[in-house]
Image (cartoon, rainbow, N blue to C red; front, side, top):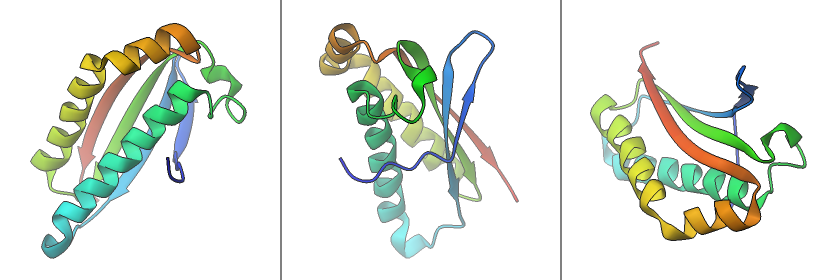
Amino acid sequence: MGHVTIDLVTTSRDGSVNLILVEQGPWQEAYFLEHLRRVQNRIYDVVDAALDGLLTNQFPQIHGNNVSIRVDFYETPQQQSEQLVETIAQHVAADVKVAEAIRTKGHVSRITFLHSWHTL
């Protein structure tokens, strides 16, 4: 796992924790796939860090709670950006290794995904 950057951490009233990633464009068309790959790696790094408990030292409120990874996109290709997060959400939800890590390690009780897209 590489360097994990989370732009904002908030706690909801129900105790769940929101890990917010901000991605700002515009993206140059020539580097479009590189940008998508970078965002994908960033999201999976956050998933791994949450599952392995690496975030609980800095953010103890994460331990044992539901975690929502939200990606806020600004001036990126909207359809592709949103589809990326939705595809990752489906893969994580279906991944038996993720379910096993949640059950056995207990650092988080659930991981969900949200995304939003905005213009500047």
